[in-house]
Length: 273
Image (cartoon, rainbow, N blue to C red; front, side):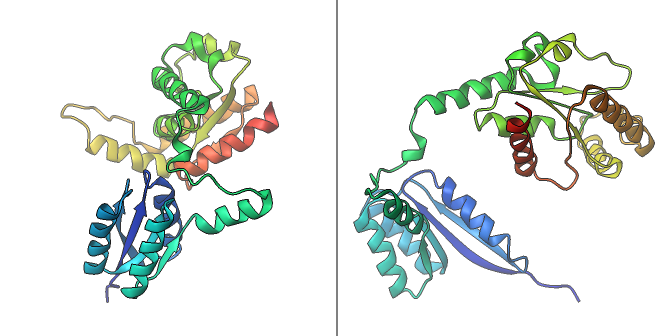
């Protein structure tokens, strides 16, 4: 008998972009596999008129309410109306801010979108993203020494999405495909500044991803041995040997999300610098 998954409404109200709430809500919801959250995201809610419409929508589809609203009156209005509707609600940042205030002995500025200011870190992320997009798939190999991280790996080991995720954290990242029999650029071996990391996965996993690539490719694409497990195993053998020869750390991405792979790379950086 087929199991029926339960669904619930998850309302996320923010006076900024809502990124913090989305991350918190999904992290919590992931712990409950038997229930699927139906997300309703309400960003940039900064006045009573906007908030009233949101609360009406919640009344029509009750569920869990998470919110981050700096304005005290609006925040109190959310709590009051949720109690009246008998809907559970949490002001996600309030307990954290209270701890900061208690420890630091200073009140918070209560400024909307304070984490999104266009400061030096913001422009560093933009620069990193531009660099990473320019150096995707082995482009501009003579510039590799300007990178913070260089990812190497055979096709379909998540090099590009991992590079972009790292760049969004301000880490300039280049990536190079490893193809047996194809020479790697000299710029890679001459680079002394970046952390060079090899990405691998199981042959089964890569074969599955490559098969999907072939099925979704344009007409006339010749897959050949692209998804063949034996061929992939040889590619992986080559990648492992190359990394071992140059003492480059290897990360197996088979069961890792992009975020987990990026976190592992970030953790490697201070130890190897």
